[in-house]
Length: 470
Image (cartoon, rainbow, N blue to C red):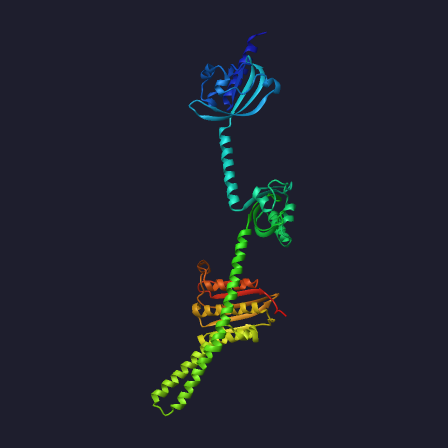
């Protein structure tokens, strides 16, 4: 038998191993029990920057790695050591992080195999990810926001620490679930939240909703939930964020209460001024008009110029009296308490039509008697809206409608004038619109304004019907 065949096969096998090692990014070494090299892979420079000859000159692997990684007898006791993270200084002072696997062998006259993998880029990515996660955590804490992740098929859900806090529990106190989340949602909001989230999940769509939660600490909080469902024909995953709106809602509520107190104080001041004008100023003007009448009678033989002047003064005095009377009723319409909302609106529209020469169509359906606070709200909004028509619309006609729709009373004031840009007006925050909107809010109503340049304006109020207190 030809002895060259096994020799050739061995040579080819060694060449294959050499080529394989060259193509690897890992570095492989074999040492004896004392740590002296018996084998150095040909691609050692890829990680360490040193050539084979430079590494061979170091003699010991501890010099290449910077220190001994194993103690005498440690490998025999454990069998092998896996996934040792170790930082080295490569040629040129370059720092690298290696993942090293050490195991016993009997090859190349050695007894210990070292496989070194460069994980520097991976570690940098992990550290960057960790820094980003820390920044995100800080940002979420600053914003009182928490994240959650729901794997729908398994039902497994994870919460961030801030989400746990929002629900009045210590982070990681128990494994969350969709069912346990719904248990903490306020009973009055639970069905709505469940429907919103399950519909988004079924459609693989986004959702956003506000609701109350009653935490495990028995504290009620307002939360905004916002998320997106993922799926491929069936629900797979839902990601989202919870934002604690409790403090914001407390501030908003306090502002609303302050606004309500200001409006009530404003109404009381209008009542005081109305009575003062009606009971004092108007009567004094009326007395002045009567005295001018008596004076004209006494001076009936006076020159015509004097009689004309007296007549002019009497007419102006009577006109001032009429204006004071109208102004007094605008400040506080006594007929609102005496005759009701319909008569008050009709009377105001008649007075305004006569004073400002504007045609106002009034259409009032069958509206039941309303609680005084609601009646005052609708009357004041009618006043404000019609004054805006006179000031800004550029037309000489408008319409007022008062009807009911189910359990709501609906007021509409409309014109076909120049209209306005709602976005620009909203940005300016004009006092008239703010006042009307705040009045509507105080009676649990909603103010809708429809307008556009050249499209006219419609102001609509919808509020739940509240009958008078018995």
